[in-house]
Length: 322
Image (tube, rainbow, N blue to C red; front, side, top):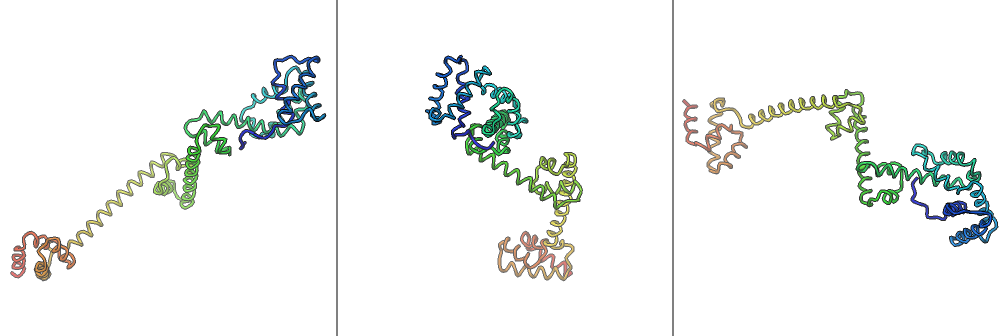
């Protein structure tokens, strides 16, 4: 079921039956039978079948006309009616379906079961199956119909023609399918790494790797309640991590700023003040002063005084000496 409509020449028996179906409604009698046969033979000759030139081909035409006259209708009428009764599930295997078809019609049309006709019947059933798939696909929402035909390995050009879409649209759907397959494979790979762990740990791992909840439910078989519980636990973990990070940042900041003014030992206070004065001899720009003081590990409390009220350094120094 992967090819478009056949462009090769149909078998002679099929062309004969098509010609007889076209006569439906006309009365064929023994008196006008020969004229009818010669007329059909001429039409087939014009299609390249050379019926008039070969006795076996003329005999095949005559036998087909005799069968039609005996039954009272063309064989293709019964065949088309039988085909219309097939449902998609009946055509899962067109070859098997062809045997059911010949069993149903064989009592009336004995030649339908001949081996040279089997290939054509299978092709007809494959096309019937494709027609049913396309009919169902056209009734689906969004890209689901295109996806159905892709999944059934229908040829790209057939999908484009039968669904009335562009190559660009088909490429986009194929790309979407490829991305979804990759995402599913990613889930399976991640699940291997957390095999044996709790559902909560599995969900955490999948969510941390940007796996959607839909795929977690579908592939990991974890329900929404399990996902919600894991997300709640993740929120609590995140809050704790944030709290620890803030504590660590505050600790580092305090270490960088040095001790508070009242916590600086007297001897260190004098050394720091001397260092600040030396720095201020090099620059009176606050940013530069702060940078050099930071490099010299001078407590921020002293630096703040130096840049805002440098005279107070004298008071601090005297207070230390006293």
